[in-house]
Length: 175
Image (cartoon, rainbow, N blue to C red):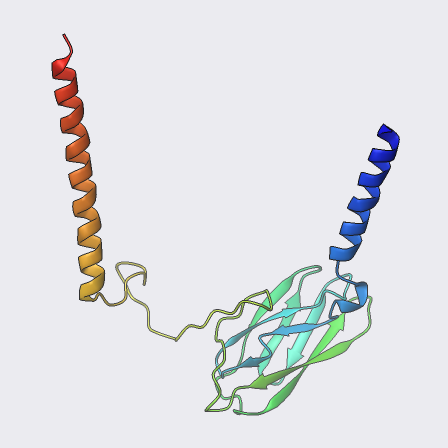
């Protein structure tokens, strides 16, 4: 009976693995993420279909070298024409060349300026100057944030005083 149970578990595990693995045809040989970007924005270039190093070139950014199995970041030129679509040419070392499309956002279209590697999540940022002193971690403070922070500090102090007093009175009762 143990052999049947082990074989069943192995078959179920293999079936689950086969169902969750992406099919080989689903892998894009060349990717540009995001596919729509503002002038001056950044895109992540990847060539998962290449077994070795790849090169990516376009009329709106400098030629970029993509390491085998990795990705590279390219900054789109500030003078890229809004609403235009550009071809990104990929050349694989020991593989076939390919292309992908990159669209420059029109004035009314919003896009991400800092891309993420995954296709499901994007990070939207607005360009700003360098903020010295705190490393750019502090923007503006509003009254609600200050009140919430102050109340958290007050609650922590009150809790600490309560626990310390309780321990000291409990220790004083022991003889």
